[in-house]
Length: 440
Image (cartoon, rainbow, N blue to C red):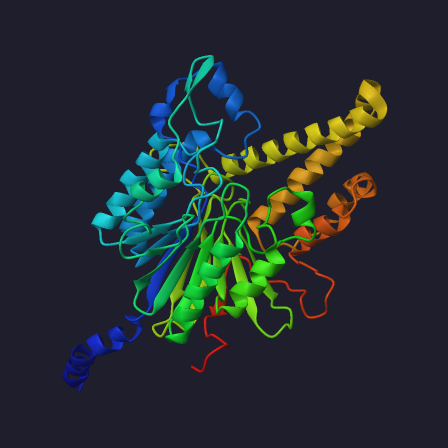
């Protein structure tokens, strides 16, 4: 009897294992901000001053990107990798060359990679420099044409269709799945021409029964209330119009980056009959150093995602999750402290700053605590009443700040329209890709 069972198992095990073979695996990452090691000619005052107050751990950027590539190549083995912009510190050609060298390693393993530029990847960036002791020197920066040539194997080659005036493109890296990479420029803007092009490609793919996902650097949806007015370039300009157009064109999911926090927001078209998810992914160089693992069902009807983190680096005991967390907390605290000092100085002079020192420190600490909670995702699970109390004076001075803070700490984006408030799991979620515009 045991021999018969073993024979049955050996005969049918391959068929049983094949049931999930049709699933496709993706990895999504954003904002690695890689700085080529050779741009640090020698450490000194210039480099130290740059790192002060930075929430981006640029000094670890190359090592973190190396670790991410190693995980993709040796552990994750995805069919496709999406990188949603800010590949480099500030668009330096040397940094792009470093990124491409690592992507070439993935390509040699048969792993497809698609990229789009972020606001730090284009020319016109004054921070594209090398560091040598007390001084800096300007270095060559990527232009659009140079970027497209550099990443010809990663979205900008002959297998893609490219919109004429930008680095926006469409391709089909997996049979039946069309990916549209949207170039949102340095300031988070889409022209009507580019938007029309994107929507035409999405509608065409949907009409052919294909699934469509998009990626763009700037968020499509304000993930916290009033972010679009209180945080400059937080979200794509004219997002209401763009959201409506993308939904009607058949796009159900868009992967974004830019704000260095992992947050998923769902919103609807004007009639609240169709929806889109903006899957915003945090930065590799900012705590918690997130990336997404995504599984597409074998019929491409559902997308299931989880969130992972880089918490350590091989052969490097200077980096840890606690270290990354402290870097972020310290940077946000210092930034808020400087903003608060400037506000008080303007209204009450230097003496006012001195008298308000303890309160300013309390507020800036609370702001850093709040941002850490937001960065970790799935907020609303801890008591934040002390933080809200610390912000009370700011709420009185800055219109809309209370609603923004409440939204950030509750993981809720209340738009003031019934049916549009949502609390979405930021870290683990299943999303349907079935297009309501067409029969399945």
